[in-house]
Amino acid sequence: MSQISNIRADNVVRQELQGRGIDARTGVYGDHTVQLGTGLPIKLDAIKTPSLPYAGFFRATKIASGRAGIEQSADGLLKQLTRQAGKLDAGKILGLLKAGQTHFERLNALGQITQAQKDNKLRMFTKSVEKLSNADLAAVYQSFTSAEMDLLQTALQREGEINPDARDARMAASRLFDLQALILKEVSNRSAVGILEDLKAKNPGDDTLQNVDTPKRLSAQWGDTENAPENPANRPLNGALDQNIVRNAAHPHEHDISAANLLTLVEVAAQSAGRREKNAAVQAQRLAARNIQGVSVKDMADIMRQSEMTCNMTPEALLKYIIPNPGQPISNIFHLAKKGIKPKGDSYLQMRDAVEKNAFPELSGHEARPDERPIYGSLNLAKDPIGGATVGYGDASIVFKPQVAKRTTYMLDDTFCASRISITPERKEAFYALLDDTHLPHEFVTALKTEGSKERQTFENWLNTIAQYPDATLKRFDVLPASLEASLSRKQGACDFFHTFLVQSFMDKDSTRGLIATHDNLESLIANMDDINGNALAAAHLRKMNGGDPSVSLIGFQYIEAQIQGPVIPSRDIAEIRITMASVPEAQRSQARRQLEQFGRQNGVKITYLDEYDLTAVGNAKQRIE
Image (cartoon, rainbow, N blue to C red; front, side):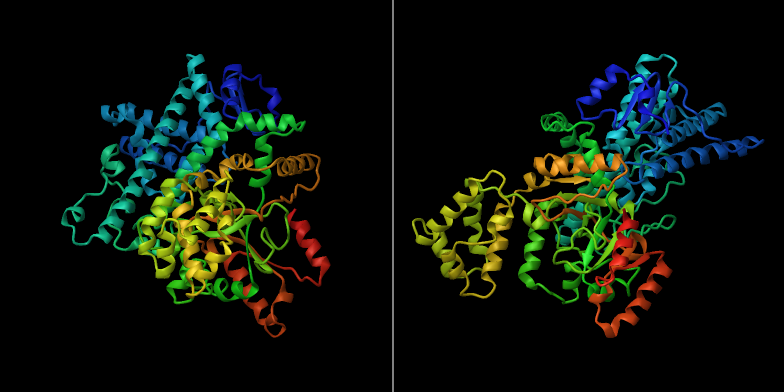
């Protein structure tokens, strides 16, 4: 394995990247060479072309081969960019870019490239981008927000500037820039279509709105319209959003994420990447102040990135809802409510809807669609055999495949606990103005709106006390002043509804979004950790480097929550199921084992039994995980 120290770093690039928190742990550029992490060094002054198939003898065959080669290179490049976070393969990316350019030049020599195609290289990618599912489109965009891609693009630009012979580097830098712009444009198109469809559905009688055209397709703007694939994102969806199924005759994307999920992932990726860069110097200073040697913020984030993502549940829920339905989305509380099942009642459903719409505003604008609401899991930093959230969630867990990480957002602690609130005069005024439209007791509303009333004074004092805490969270709303709670308790469900109304009025969308990150940018979460937890992550990295146990238990919050955006399909997204059979009623265990093992065989899912009375089994399972 190559070592980064073998390359003499370019000081200009090193200083530029250090300001964005990118150091030798991410990679290095120098001597006309770039190296990501500890991967193989790649020469930029002469990028190698992968082996290309014989183009054929006849002119028509050569033309067909060239056109197919451009599209295959673009498809291959996008496939590389959908890979899991932290696995950017610069060699393959640059090789595919060079291959596409080689095919382009061959076609040009055959007189098949128009001046418009020469002037606008976006055409090389339009068909391939349009074929992407929403989930893959989000994954590609996130790759562009990673520190590794930042290093690669910066290195290519620098090589092109200092080396007059670096034609390949200038080409690759230009193509990546073009592709990134095209990805953003496609995200914008699909998001606009989703918003437009929502507006049309809400206003069926508005003929002007119904006749508004969807955004022009990429291939219509920059590509060649001949043989362009039908783009499911740029046509009426005919209710497809409700099922979260987008179908294309040539490229089916069943159980895709919605346009709203796509926008959430793109927005969070951009924001958390910005915070990663902005906080880099401060976080490095924090490490230095604690005299932690040989550890970077990236190393600490890698401990999180390399942890499996799990979802804990009861064995009953696993056997009832997941095992019998391998091809259907895992049920969240909105799925159950659609079936008339409300295990926590209407009040919890309203609360969860309010919290999720504030944390993910992209989900607003329409009634809750179960398939686009998050499935919640956690990062198993402690490498507990049961999973990452063991207290109160159940003795069974599912372990997700690594690729699920690309459509997941992350937050320290539970969304219902960590989300921030803001008490301002403007928010108070809006709160009082909307009280009349609530279902709260009339007497309570009247008292609360009356200046100088005892209830108003109690409520104001309570809010003012909360406002003194700059980082106040939703936890502050858990306990109402006793006198207000007593007044509300006279009507069933009034306390719960009032709690939801407080969330709707005072939960702060912007500061809460500032606590959320994507997998490529988990560094941004470290800014919200205290020194004790930061030290724990640093120590875990050092143990790992010395061949020891990298597990770590963070304190002060329950877990690092994982919010999987869009539907989770057991047969597609689960790598392993773990279950404590002692928690299954004895009479049902034999049947449960048969069901689990059949599920595992049919779907390629590993089944691990963790019997709390069999310490050897637990120990062996833990050893396998580590």
